[in-house]
Image 1 (cartoon, each protein chain N blue to C red):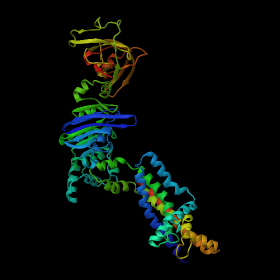
Image 2 (image 1 turned 180 degrees about the horizontal axis):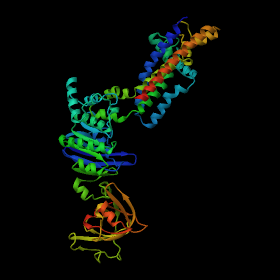
Image 3 (image 1 turned 90 degrees about the vertical axis):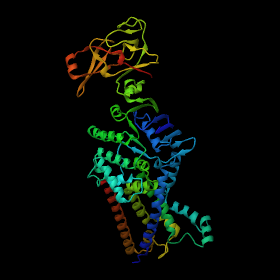
Image 4 (image 1 turned 135 degrees about the horizontal axis):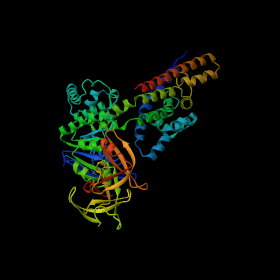
Length: 368
Length: 220
């Protein structure tokens, strides 16, 4: 394992308890703000000291509370990228990058290495500029150049896009994706943006209140988020707890509480569940897992007839640039469900009450 | 006109400013890293000379450095040097009086420092000494310079504690401020006014320098 980290740290009432293993691959740490994802990075970098645990990087022990090992950040060979460049304001771009070169080369040689890296980051002609005159995206690319000439064993990216406008984000993201690929080392990418996480890394770890909730290949995590928190972080807007269905529940396609869906979209064993928040009864795939909540992605609520058919009132229609978000409710006392439709579909339907269906295999089964 | 008091004032202020420059920066840097309770206590202790009457500071200094007090007596016994009534005795007084000015401005400057720059430097492998002198200090330069100039100006004007610890001996311990009092007491109004004008001129120049420093800070 390139990176092994098993650490604990208490900060007031917050408790960080993270176990993370990664090979020479890119892993996203996805979580809401305050969940401890940045703190985890800082512990790996040696900026923060965990209370307990062990951190290893390529067979070098960086931290071990039992053996009393705590390497200073200078000796950890960690490339740390901050939200904003963290460039030294009293030095120009070239001097900033030269600061990152560890080996004792003559000044001219250092300059050559730094200029080469700046060219790679598309920063030709900016070497004499001071950081304050650069755009946010340029600053981040200088920061990346400074990290790369430092020849790190691991790349830690702490929300590197968060201070950028969306078009600059996209530019930097391309540079970063290329870098991650070429580097071929462990990369930990901290983010709260599911799209960026999905595009940049192969694996995703989802954090919640100081712990890693779900960890796996990105596609598996998006298909089966497993927890309410993970479902929300992967962009599922409709998440609610379920109850075992009441005995006198209105029948949908079956008369019993469990059954087998015939024909149509497939052949699923399912059971009935009641969602008190939404005031609806639905079929969900039957599993042995302890399912306490469900998630329904906005694009999985389909107009028209089919399984889990519901007729709901439209409470609000929100126009997005390329789609509509239609809020549907079973009654004033219930929370609405969001459905996303492309513009032409909604403009054709356009009603106060709509009939929709939710294929049970698209319902996410969640815990807590 | 005998310029000795001006020369004496300038060297006293210069030496104590140098001492306070390093001591104030050290105190400000390390106190920022101490636990909150200790920070609060030390902060009060270091700022106290700023608000105490100069006579109280002078009295406390005499209790330590006085020829019959334990430290003063010990130094006299070992080195045969009296710590009071020398031209350089005033350095003790001015250093204590101007220390809070330097300490507080340096602390303010350090608190505005973006700590991520230090973290970035550390992860890049730069030594903590390099980070302090080449990144932290340049970042806080304006604030620290302003504090130094202010401390120097205040040292030039020190009177109370200075006069208590080194008295007034013309051509030996006389400073600008003690000379003004002495000349006024002896009814030499013309010369008093000259020294007063010298004093005002120096102070004005110093304050102008501080303003220029602050303005540059805004441009940066």
